[in-house]
Image: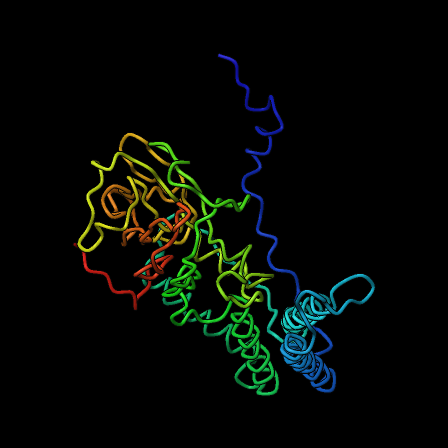
Length: 359
Protein backbone atom coordinates (compact mmCIF):
# COMPACT_ATOMS: atom_id res chain seq x y z
CA UNK A 1 0.00 0.00 0.00
CA UNK A 2 1.43 3.35 -1.05
CA UNK A 3 1.67 6.20 1.48
CA UNK A 4 0.33 9.41 -0.15
CA UNK A 5 0.64 11.60 2.94
CA UNK A 6 3.15 13.89 1.25
CA UNK A 7 1.74 13.69 -2.27
CA UNK A 8 -0.02 17.05 -2.06
CA UNK A 9 0.35 20.41 -0.46
CA UNK A 10 -2.76 19.72 1.56
CA UNK A 11 -1.13 16.66 3.07
CA UNK A 12 1.99 18.56 4.03
CA UNK A 13 -0.06 21.29 5.70
CA UNK A 14 -2.03 18.70 7.59
CA UNK A 15 1.18 17.47 9.22
CA UNK A 16 2.00 20.99 10.37
CA UNK A 17 -1.15 21.12 12.50
CA UNK A 18 -3.62 24.00 12.87
CA UNK A 19 -2.47 27.50 12.05
CA UNK A 20 -2.02 29.46 15.26
CA UNK A 21 -4.52 32.21 16.04
CA UNK A 22 -2.87 35.48 14.97
CA UNK A 23 -4.95 37.31 17.55
CA UNK A 24 -6.52 40.72 17.29
CA UNK A 25 -4.23 43.49 16.06
CA UNK A 26 -3.39 46.29 18.43
CA UNK A 27 -6.18 48.80 18.71
CA UNK A 28 -5.65 52.09 16.87
CA UNK A 29 -7.01 55.07 18.73
CA UNK A 30 -8.93 57.67 16.78
CA UNK A 31 -8.39 61.41 17.26
CA UNK A 32 -11.83 61.64 18.88
CA UNK A 33 -10.79 58.98 21.41
CA UNK A 34 -7.86 60.99 22.72
CA UNK A 35 -8.71 64.61 21.96
CA UNK A 36 -11.78 66.04 23.77
CA UNK A 37 -11.91 68.96 21.32
CA UNK A 38 -12.08 66.60 18.35
CA UNK A 39 -14.76 64.59 20.13
CA UNK A 40 -16.90 67.68 20.73
CA UNK A 41 -16.36 68.82 17.15
CA UNK A 42 -17.52 65.47 15.80
CA UNK A 43 -20.53 65.53 18.10
CA UNK A 44 -21.49 68.96 16.78
CA UNK A 45 -21.05 67.79 13.19
CA UNK A 46 -23.35 64.83 13.69
CA UNK A 47 -25.94 66.94 15.46
CA UNK A 48 -25.75 69.55 12.70
CA UNK A 49 -26.50 66.88 10.09
CA UNK A 50 -29.54 65.72 12.05
CA UNK A 51 -30.63 69.32 12.47
CA UNK A 52 -30.27 70.01 8.75
CA UNK A 53 -32.27 66.88 8.05
CA UNK A 54 -35.11 68.31 10.12
CA UNK A 55 -34.87 71.59 8.19
CA UNK A 56 -35.16 69.80 4.83
CA UNK A 57 -38.13 67.82 6.13
CA UNK A 58 -39.89 71.07 6.98
CA UNK A 59 -38.94 72.46 3.55
CA UNK A 60 -40.50 69.35 1.99
CA UNK A 61 -43.83 70.16 3.64
CA UNK A 62 -43.56 73.83 2.63
CA UNK A 63 -42.79 72.85 -0.98
CA UNK A 64 -45.71 70.45 -1.04
CA UNK A 65 -48.19 73.21 -0.32
CA UNK A 66 -46.36 76.04 -2.14
CA UNK A 67 -45.71 74.80 -5.68
CA UNK A 68 -48.73 74.41 -7.90
CA UNK A 69 -49.66 71.04 -9.36
CA UNK A 70 -52.45 70.82 -11.88
CA UNK A 71 -53.09 71.37 -15.53
CA UNK A 72 -50.46 74.17 -15.55
CA UNK A 73 -47.46 73.19 -13.45
CA UNK A 74 -44.83 75.60 -12.25
CA UNK A 75 -41.88 74.67 -14.47
CA UNK A 76 -38.16 75.27 -14.08
CA UNK A 77 -35.64 74.12 -16.72
CA UNK A 78 -38.30 71.98 -18.29
CA UNK A 79 -39.19 70.13 -15.11
CA UNK A 80 -41.97 70.56 -12.59
CA UNK A 81 -40.68 72.66 -9.70
CA UNK A 82 -42.82 70.69 -7.28
CA UNK A 83 -41.22 67.41 -8.36
CA UNK A 84 -37.71 68.84 -8.06
CA UNK A 85 -38.36 70.50 -4.70
CA UNK A 86 -40.02 67.45 -3.15
CA UNK A 87 -37.36 65.08 -4.43
CA UNK A 88 -34.42 67.23 -3.35
CA UNK A 89 -35.74 68.11 0.11
CA UNK A 90 -36.87 64.61 1.06
CA UNK A 91 -33.75 63.07 -0.45
CA UNK A 92 -31.44 65.37 1.52
CA UNK A 93 -33.44 64.81 4.71
CA UNK A 94 -32.90 61.05 4.44
CA UNK A 95 -29.30 61.40 3.21
CA UNK A 96 -28.27 63.62 6.12
CA UNK A 97 -29.67 61.18 8.66
CA UNK A 98 -27.74 58.35 7.02
CA UNK A 99 -24.49 60.31 6.78
CA UNK A 100 -24.91 61.56 10.34
CA UNK A 101 -25.29 58.01 11.67
CA UNK A 102 -22.23 56.86 9.71
CA UNK A 103 -20.19 59.77 11.05
CA UNK A 104 -21.40 59.01 14.56
CA UNK A 105 -20.40 55.35 14.23
CA UNK A 106 -16.98 56.11 12.74
CA UNK A 107 -15.90 58.85 15.11
CA UNK A 108 -17.79 58.49 18.37
CA UNK A 109 -19.14 54.98 18.93
CA UNK A 110 -16.93 52.36 20.52
CA UNK A 111 -14.78 50.59 17.93
CA UNK A 112 -12.84 48.01 19.92
CA UNK A 113 -12.25 44.85 17.94
CA UNK A 114 -13.72 41.63 19.31
CA UNK A 115 -13.64 37.99 18.24
CA UNK A 116 -16.34 35.40 18.76
CA UNK A 117 -16.41 31.68 18.02
CA UNK A 118 -19.18 30.65 15.68
CA UNK A 119 -21.39 27.70 16.46
CA UNK A 120 -23.81 25.84 14.20
CA UNK A 121 -26.61 25.24 16.69
CA UNK A 122 -28.87 27.27 18.95
CA UNK A 123 -27.02 29.10 21.67
CA UNK A 124 -27.57 28.04 25.24
CA UNK A 125 -29.28 30.34 27.70
CA UNK A 126 -25.97 31.50 29.12
CA UNK A 127 -24.78 32.56 25.67
CA UNK A 128 -28.02 34.36 25.01
CA UNK A 129 -27.70 36.26 28.23
CA UNK A 130 -24.17 37.12 27.20
CA UNK A 131 -25.44 38.41 23.87
CA UNK A 132 -27.98 40.63 25.57
CA UNK A 133 -25.23 41.90 27.83
CA UNK A 134 -23.09 42.63 24.76
CA UNK A 135 -25.96 44.52 23.14
CA UNK A 136 -26.43 46.51 26.31
CA UNK A 137 -22.72 47.25 26.33
CA UNK A 138 -22.90 48.33 22.69
CA UNK A 139 -25.73 50.66 23.52
CA UNK A 140 -23.64 52.17 26.27
CA UNK A 141 -20.62 52.48 23.98
CA UNK A 142 -22.71 54.26 21.37
CA UNK A 143 -22.92 57.09 23.86
CA UNK A 144 -26.57 57.79 23.08
CA UNK A 145 -27.36 58.09 26.78
CA UNK A 146 -24.50 60.48 27.56
CA UNK A 147 -24.70 62.49 24.33
CA UNK A 148 -28.08 64.25 24.60
CA UNK A 149 -27.25 66.65 21.77
CA UNK A 150 -26.88 63.82 19.27
CA UNK A 151 -29.75 61.82 20.75
CA UNK A 152 -32.22 64.68 20.71
CA UNK A 153 -31.26 65.92 17.26
CA UNK A 154 -31.56 62.38 15.85
CA UNK A 155 -34.96 61.84 17.47
CA UNK A 156 -36.13 65.20 16.15
CA UNK A 157 -34.96 64.48 12.60
CA UNK A 158 -36.42 60.98 12.48
CA UNK A 159 -39.63 62.06 14.18
CA UNK A 160 -40.21 64.83 11.65
CA UNK A 161 -39.96 62.31 8.81
CA UNK A 162 -43.42 61.16 9.83
CA UNK A 163 -44.81 64.53 8.76
CA UNK A 164 -44.14 64.03 4.99
CA UNK A 165 -45.75 60.60 5.23
CA UNK A 166 -48.88 62.15 6.71
CA UNK A 167 -48.86 65.04 4.25
CA UNK A 168 -48.49 62.74 1.26
CA UNK A 169 -51.61 60.82 2.30
CA UNK A 170 -53.42 63.82 0.83
CA UNK A 171 -52.34 62.61 -2.61
CA UNK A 172 -54.54 59.56 -2.17
CA UNK A 173 -57.47 61.90 -2.77
CA UNK A 174 -60.21 63.46 -0.68
CA UNK A 175 -62.14 61.45 1.85
CA UNK A 176 -65.06 59.80 0.05
CA UNK A 177 -67.74 60.91 2.52
CA UNK A 178 -71.03 59.95 0.91
CA UNK A 179 -69.72 60.43 -2.66
CA UNK A 180 -69.96 56.70 -3.40
CA UNK A 181 -73.68 56.85 -2.64
CA UNK A 182 -74.30 59.24 -5.54
CA UNK A 183 -73.35 59.05 -9.23
CA UNK A 184 -74.15 61.11 -12.28
CA UNK A 185 -76.84 58.58 -13.22
CA UNK A 186 -79.11 60.27 -10.70
CA UNK A 187 -78.82 63.67 -12.41
CA UNK A 188 -81.35 62.88 -15.11
CA UNK A 189 -84.67 64.71 -15.04
CA UNK A 190 -88.27 63.61 -15.51
CA UNK A 191 -88.27 65.26 -18.93
CA UNK A 192 -84.81 63.97 -19.85
CA UNK A 193 -83.94 60.77 -17.99
CA UNK A 194 -80.24 59.91 -18.25
CA UNK A 195 -79.56 58.00 -21.45
CA UNK A 196 -77.18 55.05 -21.53
CA UNK A 197 -74.51 55.38 -24.23
CA UNK A 198 -71.74 53.12 -25.46
CA UNK A 199 -68.39 53.81 -23.83
CA UNK A 200 -65.95 55.44 -26.24
CA UNK A 201 -68.34 56.15 -29.13
CA UNK A 202 -71.08 57.79 -27.02
CA UNK A 203 -73.99 56.54 -29.12
CA UNK A 204 -77.34 55.95 -27.38
CA UNK A 205 -78.59 52.38 -27.27
CA UNK A 206 -81.91 51.00 -28.46
CA UNK A 207 -83.16 47.85 -26.76
CA UNK A 208 -83.31 46.24 -30.20
CA UNK A 209 -79.56 46.89 -30.67
CA UNK A 210 -78.67 44.12 -28.21
CA UNK A 211 -78.88 40.39 -28.81
CA UNK A 212 -79.06 37.66 -26.19
CA UNK A 213 -75.53 37.09 -24.81
CA UNK A 214 -74.28 40.60 -25.59
CA UNK A 215 -72.32 42.51 -22.95
CA UNK A 216 -71.76 46.24 -23.56
CA UNK A 217 -69.61 48.73 -21.63
CA UNK A 218 -71.55 51.94 -21.10
CA UNK A 219 -71.42 55.46 -19.66
CA UNK A 220 -73.98 58.23 -18.98
CA UNK A 221 -74.92 60.52 -21.86
CA UNK A 222 -74.19 63.50 -19.59
CA UNK A 223 -70.50 63.39 -20.49
CA UNK A 224 -71.28 64.46 -24.07
CA UNK A 225 -74.53 66.35 -23.55
CA UNK A 226 -74.45 67.95 -20.09
CA UNK A 227 -76.74 70.79 -21.16
CA UNK A 228 -79.51 68.32 -21.95
CA UNK A 229 -79.67 67.45 -18.24
CA UNK A 230 -78.87 70.87 -16.83
CA UNK A 231 -75.49 69.68 -15.53
CA UNK A 232 -72.56 72.01 -14.87
CA UNK A 233 -70.01 71.22 -17.66
CA UNK A 234 -67.16 71.42 -15.13
CA UNK A 235 -68.45 68.15 -13.65
CA UNK A 236 -67.71 66.32 -16.89
CA UNK A 237 -64.25 67.59 -17.82
CA UNK A 238 -60.69 67.14 -16.62
CA UNK A 239 -60.07 65.34 -13.36
CA UNK A 240 -63.73 65.53 -12.31
CA UNK A 241 -64.69 63.60 -15.45
CA UNK A 242 -62.40 60.75 -14.46
CA UNK A 243 -63.89 60.73 -10.96
CA UNK A 244 -67.41 60.55 -12.36
CA UNK A 245 -66.51 57.82 -14.87
CA UNK A 246 -64.87 55.76 -12.14
CA UNK A 247 -68.19 55.69 -10.27
CA UNK A 248 -70.67 55.56 -13.13
CA UNK A 249 -69.11 52.91 -15.40
CA UNK A 250 -71.84 50.46 -16.38
CA UNK A 251 -72.33 47.16 -18.15
CA UNK A 252 -75.45 46.08 -20.04
CA UNK A 253 -76.17 42.41 -20.58
CA UNK A 254 -79.05 40.83 -22.44
CA UNK A 255 -80.38 37.37 -21.62
CA UNK A 256 -83.58 35.41 -21.93
CA UNK A 257 -86.09 37.24 -19.72
CA UNK A 258 -87.09 33.87 -18.27
CA UNK A 259 -83.56 33.42 -16.83
CA UNK A 260 -83.81 36.55 -14.68
CA UNK A 261 -84.64 36.16 -10.98
CA UNK A 262 -85.48 39.71 -9.92
CA UNK A 263 -84.82 40.62 -6.31
CA UNK A 264 -87.47 42.21 -4.10
CA UNK A 265 -88.69 45.44 -5.67
CA UNK A 266 -86.68 44.89 -8.87
CA UNK A 267 -89.29 43.45 -11.23
CA UNK A 268 -89.39 46.60 -13.36
CA UNK A 269 -85.63 47.21 -13.36
CA UNK A 270 -85.01 45.40 -16.65
CA UNK A 271 -86.06 45.86 -20.29
CA UNK A 272 -86.79 42.75 -22.38
CA UNK A 273 -84.08 40.74 -20.59
CA UNK A 274 -81.56 43.62 -20.52
CA UNK A 275 -79.98 44.21 -17.11
CA UNK A 276 -77.59 46.98 -16.04
CA UNK A 277 -74.93 46.69 -13.31
CA UNK A 278 -72.01 48.70 -12.04
CA UNK A 279 -68.78 47.74 -13.78
CA UNK A 280 -66.77 48.24 -10.58
CA UNK A 281 -66.05 45.10 -8.54
CA UNK A 282 -67.22 45.30 -4.94
CA UNK A 283 -64.01 43.66 -3.69
CA UNK A 284 -61.26 46.21 -4.42
CA UNK A 285 -62.72 48.16 -7.33
CA UNK A 286 -61.34 46.46 -10.44
CA UNK A 287 -63.28 47.02 -13.69
CA UNK A 288 -64.96 43.79 -14.77
CA UNK A 289 -66.45 42.57 -18.05
CA UNK A 290 -65.54 38.87 -18.42
CA UNK A 291 -68.91 37.34 -19.23
CA UNK A 292 -69.91 33.66 -19.22
CA UNK A 293 -72.84 33.75 -21.62
CA UNK A 294 -74.42 30.41 -20.69
CA UNK A 295 -74.36 30.93 -16.92
CA UNK A 296 -74.78 34.75 -16.92
CA UNK A 297 -71.81 34.94 -14.54
CA UNK A 298 -69.51 37.95 -14.61
CA UNK A 299 -65.90 37.32 -13.56
CA UNK A 300 -63.50 39.87 -12.10
CA UNK A 301 -60.00 39.34 -13.59
CA UNK A 302 -58.19 40.62 -10.48
CA UNK A 303 -59.23 38.14 -7.79
CA UNK A 304 -61.82 35.96 -9.54
CA UNK A 305 -64.89 37.28 -7.74
CA UNK A 306 -67.89 36.02 -9.72
CA UNK A 307 -71.34 37.64 -9.84
CA UNK A 308 -74.64 36.24 -11.10
CA UNK A 309 -76.17 38.85 -13.43
CA UNK A 310 -79.42 36.87 -13.61
CA UNK A 311 -79.86 36.99 -9.84
CA UNK A 312 -79.40 40.61 -8.70
CA UNK A 313 -75.61 40.48 -9.18
CA UNK A 314 -75.10 38.22 -6.16
CA UNK A 315 -71.64 36.83 -5.42
CA UNK A 316 -71.30 33.16 -6.34
CA UNK A 317 -67.54 32.85 -5.89
CA UNK A 318 -64.51 34.78 -4.70
CA UNK A 319 -63.62 37.35 -2.05
CA UNK A 320 -66.18 40.05 -2.92
CA UNK A 321 -68.46 40.70 0.04
CA UNK A 322 -71.31 42.50 -1.76
CA UNK A 323 -73.38 41.98 -4.93
CA UNK A 324 -72.82 44.30 -7.88
CA UNK A 325 -75.08 47.35 -7.56
CA UNK A 326 -77.86 47.14 -10.12
CA UNK A 327 -79.12 50.17 -12.02
CA UNK A 328 -82.87 50.29 -12.71
CA UNK A 329 -83.39 50.96 -16.43
CA UNK A 330 -86.27 51.76 -18.79
CA UNK A 331 -86.77 53.21 -22.30
CA UNK A 332 -87.56 56.82 -23.15
CA UNK A 333 -90.07 58.14 -25.67
CA UNK A 334 -87.62 57.49 -28.52
CA UNK A 335 -86.93 53.92 -27.48
CA UNK A 336 -83.45 54.53 -26.07
CA UNK A 337 -82.32 52.86 -22.85
CA UNK A 338 -82.26 55.23 -19.87
CA UNK A 339 -81.67 55.07 -16.12
CA UNK A 340 -84.81 55.23 -13.99
CA UNK A 341 -82.78 56.66 -11.10
CA UNK A 342 -79.35 56.49 -9.52
CA UNK A 343 -77.97 53.28 -8.03
CA UNK A 344 -79.87 52.47 -4.87
CA UNK A 345 -76.70 51.43 -3.02
CA UNK A 346 -73.07 52.60 -2.98
CA UNK A 347 -70.88 51.62 -5.90
CA UNK A 348 -67.30 50.41 -5.70
CA UNK A 349 -65.40 48.41 -3.07
CA UNK A 350 -67.01 47.49 0.22
CA UNK A 351 -66.28 49.66 3.23
CA UNK A 352 -67.15 49.61 6.92
CA UNK A 353 -70.02 52.09 6.76
CA UNK A 354 -71.73 50.32 3.87
CA UNK A 355 -74.74 48.37 5.02
CA UNK A 356 -76.11 45.44 3.08
CA UNK A 357 -78.76 42.87 3.95
CA UNK A 358 -78.54 39.57 2.03
CA UNK A 359 -81.91 38.86 0.42
